[in-house]
Structures are given as structure tokens and as C-alpha cells.
View 1: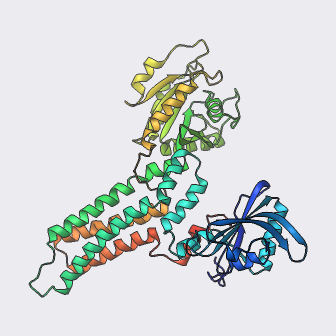
View 2: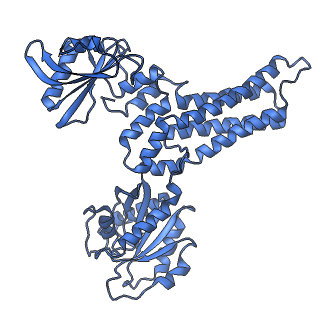
View 3: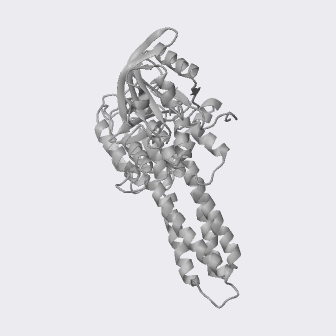
Length: 465
């Protein structure tokens, strides 16, 4: 909840570098008195006389205890700063004690401690960025792969915002023509035919539909493409997980049913983030705890975009039942890779008999997870299977659930507009649906919002951002 006394008239400060000890730490100050307050503790060329976007070397002095540190002060003057306000960034040595002392000193001189995301929120309030671009900053900080970084950069530079502006302009044009039609409904004047209005509405809906269709891929790129590692007990699933992650993440044992819950972790391969999920072995069991684990394995299969079916060729169990179990749970667009493990052992090649058990586009590979045989080839197959999740140059993707929900609602509203135009519905009813569509678009960019929505969004940020 926001503090009722917090206003943009306050001058705020916070440590903007990660917690801990490092070579350099940055303390950010923003607000109408940022430069004045920093000048009270600064010995060197006066910051009030420093041009914008210039750095000065000097001494930070506590009026009571003397010299605190020596460092740089970089001045950014309103409105040409990140927040749109006067900003000073103080770069000091990374001692946690120095950082905390400097923040306390700034507060004594008149600053207030910033709340989560308050610097970015001030940038939004001053019109420096819209809400999509603000959220992209959080995504940029959290990006853990080349693909997620690429999408965050695209949204930070306004690619999604510009697309939404195009939609909004078309909707406003459509609304204007409808309003004119309503104003002159009793006159024998036609400002636009229903065919032209319908074409505009369909064009806008097409843009919305294409954008919402990218959410599944966009969220996979951002959070990691889900890869379920499944199969019978003791097939080598946990060993494979550990090898793919390059760490001992799961317990490996010859005892059947060791894994009773899902184990997840992520790793980047060839620029794409993958979320590997080790699951309980698929088998009939009377153990109630193991049964719950198997139920969770089925759920992970349903949600996975790629499924690694790990097979022990030395097993006497018929693979047909396991294949049916897996394929019955798979999403229609999921990719299946049959991983015949333990190829270092004296076991028959069962690749031919698997052919009739697998969906048409499935792949088969023989490996030995314990001996690191075939793992590079398997990684290549996994990356190829994730080809759907590659962002192409110029492609705009939705990664944010809030954006997806708002745009889905907007699509439903514009669909009602199209139906109304096709059926000859009264213009005032159609205009209401158009206003609703514009409302949902405005929710995404922040032209229409509430304090509760803003508080929720900016609470995701760290204090210094």
C-alpha cells in the first residue's frame, strides 16, 4: 500500500546497485532538491554549477563525523533525466557501511527513502516512459537469456507501445466516424459507409489477434521453455537432468521411485532459456505419496512444450503403455524426443519398435547420460524443437500476463463492434463497445489506470529502480 504522504515533491534516495560488497556502489537521488541536498555534503566543484550529464570528482563529508568517502557525482537535470526530475548519482566505494552511512546522511539532509520502483514510477508519471516501457525495465533487469533480453530491449525502445498506438489511432478514427454518424443521424449525410467502418474494425482486430497469439511463445522465452523429463522409474531421468544442468540437482539412486515430486531448474542453451523438469517415474504403484508424484508428472507433461521421454532399453517392460500414457497427456503443439538411455550397456537398439509408438514429428536419439555420450546432439535436438520460441528480427511479442488479459478483452470488444456493424446494430451501442476497446488498450500503456494497478506493478521493482 502506498504511503499517503508520498508525493513527487519529495526528494528520494536509494542504493541502486545490488546488495552486498563490491568495488563500486551507486546511490541515486531524485527530486526538486536533489542537487541542493547533495551539495550540502559535497566538497568539490559545486553540483549546482555542473551542467547536465556531467560527472565531478569530490569528497563526501558528514558535517558531524568528517570525510565519508571520495567518489563521483553525476548530475542529470530535469527534464532530461530518467525520472524527468533533477537527479544526482553518487558513485562511491562498495563498502556496505559506506553505502548505509551515505543514505542516512542524505535522509538527514532532507531526502526520503525511495519505495520499490519509485524512480521508474516517477519516469512514468512525468511522461518519460509509458507503462509498457516501465514494465520492460523490470524484465530487462530480470532477463536471464539472450531471447528474454531481446524482447525486453524491444519493449523498452517502444516497439510494443508503438504498435498499440497504431491500434488506438485506428480505433479513434473508427469512433470519430461513428460519433459523426450519431450526431447527424437525422440528416441525409454519410460520413463513412458501413463497409469502411467494418474494414477498419477488422484491420484492428487482425492486429490484436496476431499480437495475442504471441503470448504463449513470449512467456516461454521469458520464463524458460518448459521441458518435461519423463519415463519409467530408474530410466535415468535424474541423471539426465543433472547432466543438462551441469550440477547435481536431483538425487540419483538405483532404487525405483526415488523421485516423488517435480524438480525444476533453468539453463540457457544457444540463447534460449529452458526450464527442465524432472518428474516421478511413470508406473503403477500403491504408494499414495508416489501416486501424487505421478499425477504431478502428468500435469507437467500437459504444460510442457518439449517432452524428453527417457527410456531404459534393458527394461523388460513394454514401452507401448508408457508411450500411450505420455502422448495422451501431451499438448497438440508439444514436441516429443524419445531418449534411449544407457547405450553404453549391452542392450538392443529399440529405435525401430518405437517408430510406431511416437507422433509423426517426434525424434529419437540414443545416449548414455552417465557417460556423457550423445548429450551434445540431444541439446541440438532440444534447441531445434524450441524453434517455435525464437524471436525474429522486428517481431513483437507479448510476455506480460497483464498485457495479454487486457488485449484479450479488447479483442472481444472489437469482435462485438464487428458483429454490430454486420447486423446493423444502432451506432450508440457500437460506440459503447468501441469505448470499451479503447479502455483496455489504455490499461496496457497506462493512459488509463488506477493507483492499485500502479502499486502492484511497481512493487516488482527493487528499491533503487
